Image (cartoon, rainbow, N blue to C red; front, side, top):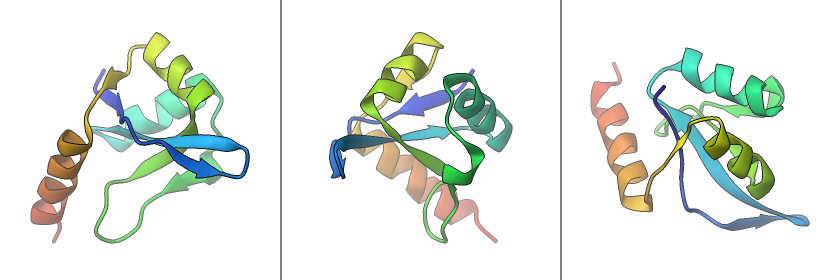
Length: 87
């Protein structure tokens, strides 16, 4: 499985958030469902990767389910590649 969580730590209310991304939309949605993240939280904005913002407890679940840690630099590289591949 090619699902990743970054090291971002952004406050959102009482939670601390990070990103859940994947190589394919199917893998991303499957992991989100597996760790209990509702599909309505899916984000796909122009100029960025399709992703979910997840709290740290969901990050821990994702890592336990096989997601891989990636650095901010790795995430930025993936975003750049996605922009280059966009029509």
